[in-house]
Image (cartoon, rainbow, N blue to C red; front, side, top):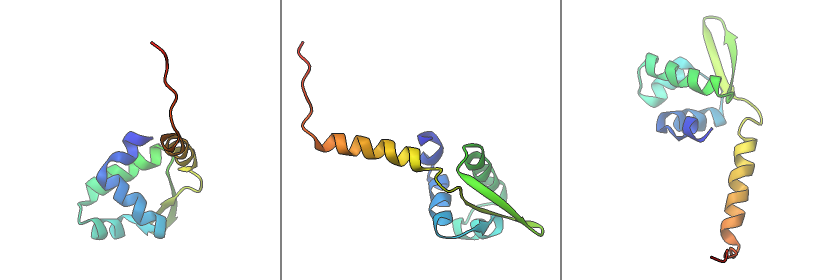
Length: 92
C-alpha cells in the first residue's frame, strides 16, 4: 500500500478526496494536471482498493473507500508507538 500512496500526486488526490467527492474534471482543475495523468492515478488508487466510484450522468465521482486506510493506520500507529519505547538490545 505504501508504494501506491507514496506518489505525490496520488497522495494529493487522496487528500482532496478526504474532504469531498470529486469527479475527474474537478481533480484536473485542482491538480493542474492533464486528464490522462489524473485518470492513470485514479485507476491505480481504485485497483489498490482505496477509492469508490459513483456514476453521475456522464461523470464519475470518486471518494475514499470507508476504512480503506485503517490497516495502514494501525500498522504505522504500532511503529510509532514502538519508536517511543526504549528498545531492547539483542546480545551478540
